[in-house]
Length: 145
Image (cartoon, rainbow, N blue to C red; front, top):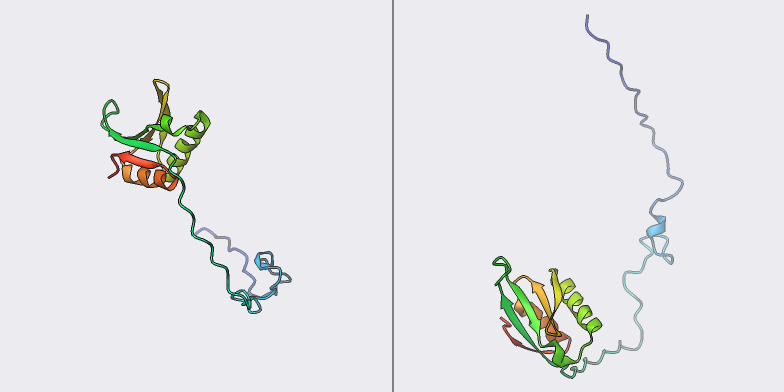
């Protein structure tokens, strides 16, 4: 004789109406129904004001980019030097290094060589570094391509 298998209880097939919408909290407060929600903001009689073009920043100084692989296991790094001539303080140099690392998605550090800061960024992307520094108002020289 075979084993007797126990059958699971039948699943009820009757439908129940929901008493509340679980997505009601996601809808805008002014629109209770998606059909009533406005698709575009109402048009004003006045045209939208055009933002003035940003004025070019005064150059903050000249930074030099170098690409090196020596003493780094063959891995390339981009070194930003000449920071002392820009007049940036230690905190500003650290903030600039952090901003560059965050924008590039890479690692790096700020090294002090003979009381002069240098930002060392891991990876071979001098053109991106030059573009980011120019956007911050610096003149960039050295390896930029």
